[in-house]
Amino acid sequence: MHPRLLKRPLLACLLALLLLGSAAPAWAAFSLPPLPYAAEALEPVIDGTTMTIHHDRHHGAYVSNLNAQIKANPALAGLSLEALQSRIAAFPEAVRNNGGGHWNHSQFWAVMAPEGEGGAPSAELMAAISAGFGSLEEMQAQFNQAAAARFGSGWAWLIRRPGGELAITSTANQDNPLMDLPGIERGTPLLGLDVWEHAYYLQYQNRRPDYIKAWWSLVNWNEVNRRYGEAAAPTAA
Ligand code: MN
Image 1 (tube, protein in one colour):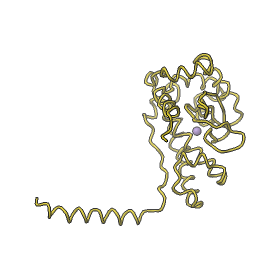
Image 2: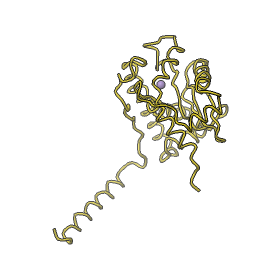
Image 3: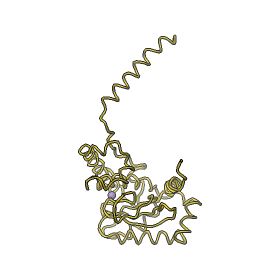
């Protein structure tokens, strides 16, 4: 085709894209990320029914409630999900609960993998774990203790503190270590475990410690390594 004939359709396409862009809402709604594996893929540690309800209904509700909050609070529009966590104190409690719920669950699906597929801690992460806790087993024991001791609903976390060392923390409800709230030890979450009853009750009932112990076989260390590498990387000047 002659180059001059190509020019007009290209211009028309560009114009159409511009028009579409200006007609779109001023903010992009958050959406529910699909599970990165089949709902049954984590069995027998977590059953498929729990995974389906947890992802589709619980996480789905956090996403739609968060989008409703953005409509009601225009100052939220345009903030990334991560940026929102670090400014959460400025917004209503519904933003804290649903924005936290969306971030927490998005990381939760990602830091799990079917048994045998999650790899192992990298040499760099292992060195940081040894420096902070003495051993992987001791880190896990402290994490399990924080997860079991969380009264009511919440999360247990392995975080990287701003200074670089690792720590175990726990947050209530849908709070997380990125939030600028009093009483929360802030840091970069590397691994977070949901200890709300909705995460385990169908299969484990009141036996939360059994769920916590079994859950370690699902940890996606490849993703935890990636998060650690990203957090430890020097920031661009
Ligand atoms: Mn949950």
